[in-house]
Length: 374
Image (cartoon, rainbow, N blue to C red; front, side, top):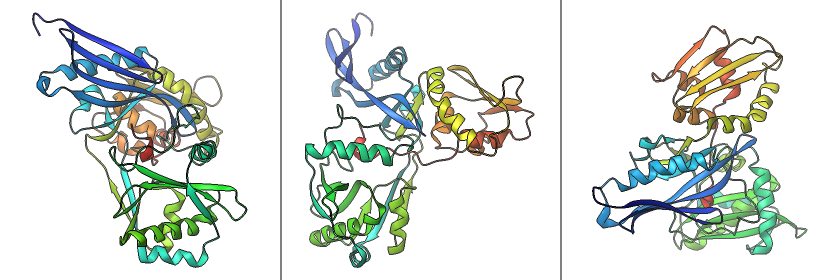
């Protein structure tokens, strides 16, 4: 880029920040940084969602996006974000410290089996959601996902209904559910698709309404003449267990270096926010009456976590890259799997070192609902 003038600028519009790289006053590539509050266990972190990454066709394969993205990582750190997530193309974002943190689970039921739920379904009514329903939807979603790692905390100033379905270019339709007393009781969201029923989000206030919800979706599938219904759900969602009684099939895909990826930006602030959650995990475990100190060493620095009575505490050191720590914190990888990674070093004489890691960082089911993809 000799004899050229290069500029990187940021255009701010509310919670969305567009970063652009200009060569000789012409924009050659750009990306978006969007503010989110993301759950990690029962805690939350400030998350920067990366979206709309694009380079003009005539400027591709010149290294411009690599420069812009590296600068954007520094920008996000300076802006005080704790972590960042994105949905990436294969084998690109690992260059910037991102690691896979999300799988893509889905559940499939045969329509003829789903129809059997009608026999035990409670009476409900449904109607397309309107802005009047949004406060109740936000409250129910936040209640049901209060401890779901990687779900987004929704708020009235940012939630504007369901804009997308199972893919970025697929629109969604949604209905609000009311019980026999005409009370808001839940909602369900699926793709606008004339030939299939792909459910991308559902929540109910009372799980006794699951049969009615399934019967309603079976009726939708019959109307579209499709032989099955697909649900894009986290593996531990209670609807998945309910569906077992009708026969179902789970499918889970884990990507190598693509799709849902994340990295830590500010390690100290992240663990300041997570400490109450970690302390709660210890308090609810067999380790509650014991002491432990864990030192986390990454390329971002060193963090010491202390539990139990003050004073000299037994513990150990975990030396790993921040991307592996991100996977551990989110529960995408278990402590055992991380400790077995050749790139991870653990130093401890504590006989229960691995047990402590299991308590602090339990293996889980991190999940961001498809309508919240960015």
